[in-house]
Image (tube, rainbow, N blue to C red; front, side, top):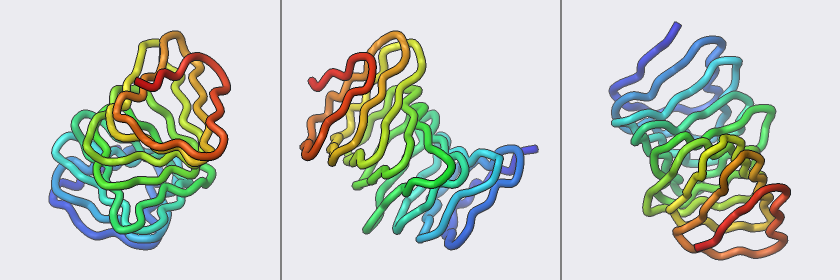
Length: 171
């Protein structure tokens, strides 16, 4: 089944989606330090903003979709766990650091900054664009599908900038 959270709210500690899907489909949802876990999926969808304000350990699945917003708070970090996050559209606001595995399956906009300190992987066939600012601090870019990944928002890159497969264009 599915659960729709439409009014926003503050979440701390473990946010477990045991099965099915939880849709953040309205309002602003702030996640303090804690984790997202379980076999289900947490969707940030059109009309909703998820503010990551602290370190959120990804032991489950977080998906940014439609025109949803994923926003880094004071210290927004998606930390590596046994799960992953996916950018299927939407936008990045504030500064958000990804230390784990993040999939890019759609075009992502926004005026914020995505810091790659883990692995960003594109596996779908079409070209995909991230137009938010992207900073890479030793992160890996893994383009596995047909098509390419375009980083068009500018950014700063320090440490190793590793492209394991495919093409990543900085424009």
